[in-house]
Length: 208
Image (cartoon, helix red, strand yellow):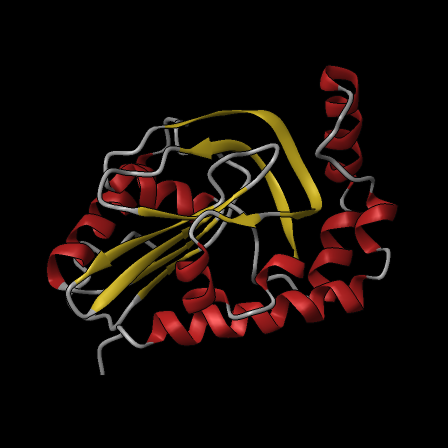
């Protein structure tokens, strides 16, 4: 389907991930960025996951570039603003691993507040505050379930990406497919509790 020309019919917009880059010459990328800008102008809240977070950053003027390290698998991030993290993620955020799969990184755009940071990718999440609603951009995949993790880990691309990054940098921020699925039920359940808190907070701004 074509990207909608306007966000007027929508209560909120959720943008998800993909294996392309925001910088790829794909016609729908500019169309989606225009839709995100239209949503902001109309008071429609946006939540972006990985590529979606990068698109949201670009919509507000933030650059998207190659990250120093590929992040692949489970990794910890840390609150950059403790009070903001409690509001959006609850009390358990610092003890939770998030699932990563990205080679690009976004710049936190000027109107945003950085929510989370990481050792291998500094900008992990941001909040764009607006009157009565907020936009959220995330670099990680907070939406993952155990079945999704197993499916992604079983994709031959996971092994190729892991081996390529290990050869390029030593791979400090990548996990093998076997490491991704280790204790996946417990890891995903912890992340799901934080995700529920974040989604509930974002939904306060969604139009009735």
